[in-house]
Amino acid sequence: MKKRYNFDSPKNVKIKETLVDREVLLNQTFLVETLLEQGIIDISEIENFRNNETGEYKEIFEWWLISDWLAYNLRKYKEPIIQNEYGTWWGRTTTGQKIINDSIIDKICYDLEILEGQKNEWNI
Image 1 (cartoon, rainbow, N blue to C red):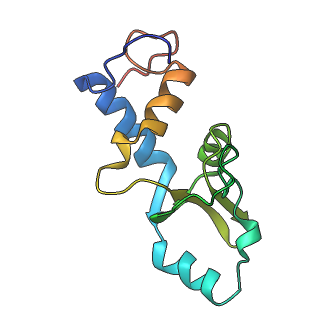
Image 2 (image 1 turned 90 degrees about the vertical axis):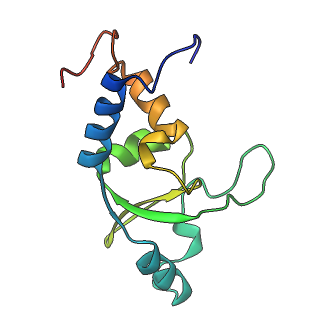
Image 3 (image 1 turned 180 degrees about the vertical axis):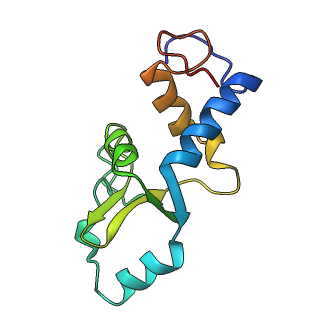
């Protein structure tokens, strides 16, 4: 994001809410952690689990069931993803705020040019 942009204008909040409501399906933290603990899902299935710069594992606070479309877009930013025959989950590395306030959602919306005043602005 090259210039300052108001991601929190009323219109952009509505756009981000619409995207999140459509693409982020359900918090399944307990389920995914249980599947990992029981070895049903292996830790090696977590894509982008290591930080490429430091080599350290990312701290995942929550697991969200998401659409394949959102997984595709989150991969572009090296977000943790599990995708297998059981489902597609995003390992959220922030917590304590609404998902629409995560910077990764700002980046996706901005790069898709769907925000207010952009080429593909969503009319909501």
